[in-house]
Image 1 (cartoon, rainbow, N blue to C red):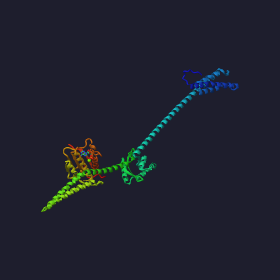
Image 2: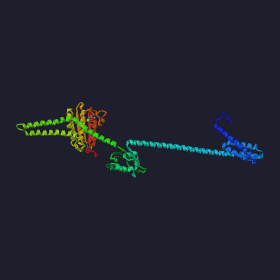
Image 3: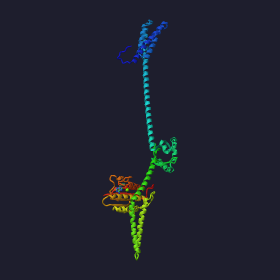
Image 4: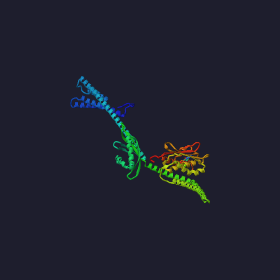
Length: 517
Ligand SMILES: Nc1ncnc2c1ncn2[C@@H]1O[C@H](COP(=O)(O)OP(=O)(O)O)[C@@H](O)[C@H]1O
Ligand SMILES: [Mg+2]
């Protein structure tokens, strides 16, 4: 079969057309051959039924147009190639029969096509649904991967910060979730499962159990957050410090259902704090000793004074006694001055020894006026050398406070030493002013003001920081230690500039230190 070159038909389509139309011709030709064979063997003339089968086969497999061709072809063969065994009406009847049959077959074919279209539609729908399902599965897998990944990140973060998370049910007092890090913090094997939750109570330090339970009970009663620190004791006896934070979860009617929270192992932090505290206390001692070394010279001068006075008085006493007529009254007066001088020297020395002592803070009743006077005695030598005038206004009715006398002496000494340093290079009048007064709520307030160089400009807020110093040989610890001493007594220490020049330092101290000190 030849087809024009410009046709859009593909080779496969050409082959298909050839097959379909060939089928029409071949099937009707086969019907014709069979019918001839039947006639040859004097069998009843069957062309009509063969032709119908041929038409039907062509319609079914070849399509409507080849089917119609088969019908036309059958009419032609029936009319012209068989002996005229029927009359014209009969022939028309046959032709009509072929046409009706062809029309019926067209209907059947159309039905089949509709059915095929429907099946194809259904198949397409099913394919689409299947694709959507696959997409959904892929999406879910991606989401699951994401959740898994963020769980892995979370576990890593928990490991890094030694923080375990948990959820526990208030009603049944049992755990609903424990993260892997939680098991590690408590020293359990994660394979213990939620059973470990019950066993954790045995791990809590016996001294901390009651306090911890009380805090949790209170949070349950108030449906509130809780925040506690306690120790746990591991089977090998090691102690860990744990910080737990819990957040209440309520249902829609406001009933407390669960607590969600975390437990962090803060042992390292605690040990570091402990080491820092130790270092600070050592440093305080060192600083006290260093300051004392610097003061030794002035101390010698200080002690020298009463000793020299005692010598003079003793000589006077001797002179009165060595007279031809000894004047006992004068001699007694001189001798008692000797006793006073010696007592003053002894006091200076014993106070100095007190400052050198290292020990745990002692609580005793302290009169701040006495502390001021004692320290002034130690510093007065330095001050007179630098021509510093001292003005003191001490309240007579100052209440006694409870505190560590040696520590408070150290604060006063640090502040006075700083004032002396500040005035060393200052021009004009050098004046140290010390006041004590009864403050609000019966507190004791001490003010030390000088006419020195003033607080370092722009850095005034840093002077209480450790190691902040503007002096070539300064330690930068004096104010830091002083503030921590005052705060440990429940008081406050702060500074401000003084007009027209100099600086003022203020101390307030409560009569009783805070209960936990
Ligand atoms: N009375 C004062 N007047 C001016 N500046 C002061 C005074 N007292 C302290 N400062 C400032 O605060 C700094 C820190 O003081 P301090 O902690 O005692 O350490 P140090 O005396 O070793 O420098 C000082 O270096 C100084 O700059
Ligand atoms: Mg200092």
